Image (cartoon, helix red, strand yellow):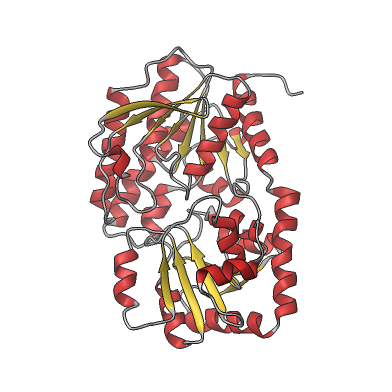
Length: 401
């Protein structure tokens, strides 16, 4: 596997890459991963890897080959391009020292990871399978990143190379299919492999967690978890908090926009930043909130479906999605039956939806209860890993059982 993100990263793509690789290792397969240095979502290098240029380590039976790269604390098109270039050059100059594998899987949105995976598979003459988690060309165009138009053109060329080289292409959502076809990929080689809920459900009563976190009984808590980046458009939650001091808004996690958001939030006592928590505590914190928020800029349509949604559904709390109605995120929320949509970048609409849920606890509970049902029916870890196994086996020509 080639995946820039991997454990101990606990947000975004890292948990999926980790669970796939550890699953393969648990089946007795010799599993190697070419990864970057841990840096996400804070976009700061994990101190445990300070000074490391290359490192080989073993985690849960998986051999990790880590390569140093730049870590830009702020996102511009140029800095993102430098990051991708450093991943690409180091990965190609120092590929893993290992025997010829049976197949190569690459986790994209890493453009560098996709290109490296294609090059290594070609060198070894083995099947190559990228899994599209995000589309970086569309992301650059839609996320509001400075210099995004030029970056989008370059990213799209790299994506086209990585995807056209593939034996099969996995996509996590059907809204990506047309974009992938637009890169010249035969639709007969595209397979749908949705992500799964990579966290368990809550383990302790909500009241106990709320007391530990200092959230009062009767207080309405709106929580956003995960990356604080440009495409999330989290300014809408800052403005939601500003409009109603009785609603506690919690931003859990990190990201390159955190400092900017903290400046905007100055003087808003009911908006709180919360440091990332461990995997054992994370489900309980989500379940302790009254409403789980997912936000995106209005321009974000077909480039991303947030990985946080699977965790939100497992938590059993109602979701309010401040996103474009025609995008993949909106489709997933509606498909789950566990949330409601409001117009993106509209704090008044978001606040109205939160108040409506707070005023009708029974309706909010029933809405939230749809999440675990959806997970059990469609998003179990077992089913998700089975889809990945089937994808790789098909690419290798293994007969279906």
